[in-house]
Length: 262
Image 1 (tube, rainbow, N blue to C red):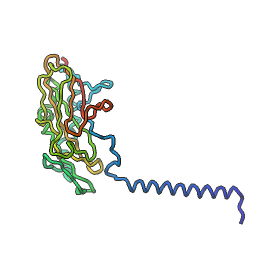
Image 2: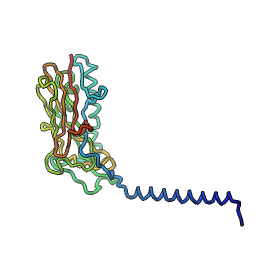
Image 3: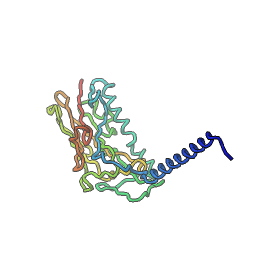
Image 4: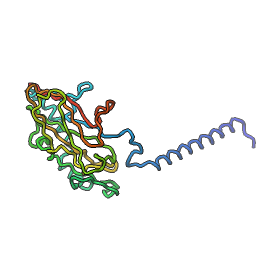
């Protein structure tokens, strides 16, 4: 049977698009089959983690923690920011996820070769907020912002399989230095006292593998004096954490202005 030419043309295009759709579907299937669902294939640009500080009060591009001790609305804004940030760190709240969280051995890396937690997951270490001491908000819910001893909380961002200090037993720690206004800072306290991120929270295996993972934290309390204004740099110190990259201002460090007015 002889069909009109338009029919042959239509059949050709139907066959062409069926083949193209099949090839496209096959390529997507092969790609998805070869991808690891628990970790990205390429992390070339993540040489070292970024560092963040709370309260996260930005003024245009600069990070400024400026508050008025005499105005409750002003200093309460700062303390409320820390309160909200620490809600997931409530110890009781973490205890509700006992199937996924555990109290880990401190001072050593927590390697997990297998998915031993429920639902093909890996365990996450519980972070006890009491290690933040006077900056935990448990004894002082103002976090020092109603006076001249404000607290800030330092968090290091996550990088999958990252081992600070290249897998040695040296824990990374926070070191805060005064860049401007040295005479206005009388003392700096760290919580925990040595300002370290415990090794048990490393390595991180990714959101899918550790859905209940919480970043370890370090709290810093500044004792402001004189003019009560200073420019601060808080850096996470480890052999493989860089902080002098001009194009990545938050890599390995965070810089902010701290000022208490009255």
